[in-house]
Length: 290
Image (tube, rainbow, N blue to C red):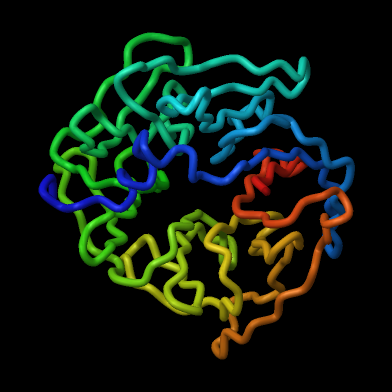
């Protein structure tokens, strides 16, 4: 895979930093009941010219880690403290770039997609308490995005030709292909009838994967272009332009699209929502928007 021309690496090369959109991270309050979800108090927590993206809530919900590019240099991971509202730098690696900070199931590390000096993209981990990073898997590269399934397995979006969605066993570094070709980058764990499943989107349909046998099943129609999604109160949440939308589907056989608008944030100057993250306790939402 190392000889594959990587679209992801090219996108984030130093020569193209100036072409990246100016994106900010907004934080909103969530008030959820069994039947309704209300979003309020949107606050721009980055509020600067430049690229701030890929927010991830800590397991205790006290801070957010995110990707930031400063001074048109490489990307690093930054930290936003929800209580103090202070921003600090979490990684500082002059020779490499880090993307997609993700809290690992072990509770001790975060994993990132690191673009190494030779443009190889592999999964690395950084200790939450500080210290040197280390490789998660040395034999698996061309990684664009990832989602942890459990401590022993990770879902990877591979920037190959064609693109591939795979489940990889950490101990053997052997991957099983789930889907390939026109896959969206979004991946998430959610619940169907109290059973945890893996979700992804392919063409115009969201799919769910039974983790017991790795079989995919259509879940609902995706009639919009957004690639990112998450779950709140077992509801599938995504976005269209400045709107946060929710799906009322509950795994019916006909998997029809039943999307409704949860909130329209255009009044706050938000134009295009591209990412959504929910705090572990379900009281906060972070979005990325232009």
